Every structure is written in structure tokens, then in C-alpha cells.
Figure 1 (cartoon, rainbow, N blue to C red):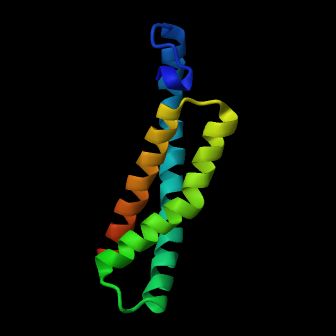
Figure 2 (cartoon, rainbow, N blue to C red; figure 1 turned 90 degrees about the vertical axis):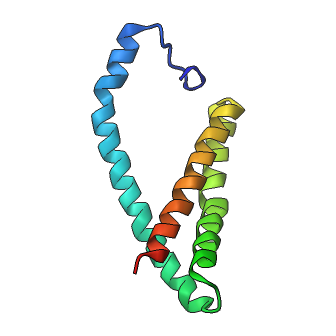
Amino acid sequence: MTGMGWDVSNKLQMDAMKKAAGPAYAQQFMGTLLMATALSTVIWSFSIAAPFLQDWQRALLTGTTLWCGVILPVKYGEHLWGKRPLSVFCIDAGYYFLAVNILSFILTLWK
């Protein structure tokens, strides 16, 4: 929390953050649905372009490719221009790496 600029000892700041959490979670959920829709389209494209891959290989290829090509550069830009600590960048990038790959596995293996 301190890496993001939050003062955990400031009760007013913590209360404001808790109050804003509900709408933020709803917006994050909508973003995840959008990511799942885009990811399922890309997975479908990979199934046509690379039919020789097993399902788990296609899931790993799709998730990692999208993470490297789309999410990692954006998160690095946030780190670079937002003057955020490297630890926050690693946590954010790692979270999205896991999220995209888990979602990719779910969408690929869901038949």
C-alpha cells in the first residue's frame, strides 16, 4: 500500500479508499469480462492458425504472447512515467501474467 502512495496510518485516507472499493471492483469485473471476450477471440484464431498444438500449449502460447505484447509494455510505461517503485511494477505485471494465463487456460479447455 505504501508503494502506491497510501498512508495506512491515515484513517481518513483508508476510509475513502474503502468507500471507493465497491465501484472499483465492479469496473474491474467489467474489464475482466472485456479481456475474456478479446482473449477468446484470439484463442479461436490460434486454433485455426496452429491446429497442431495441444489445448494447454495453445492456452500458454496465447496468454503469454498477449501478456508480452500488450500488458507488459503498458505496465512498464506506468512504472517508467508514473515513478512507481520496481516492486509495484513486478506485483502488477505478475498479477496480469497469472490472470491472463489462467483465463486463457479456462477459455481454451472449456468445451
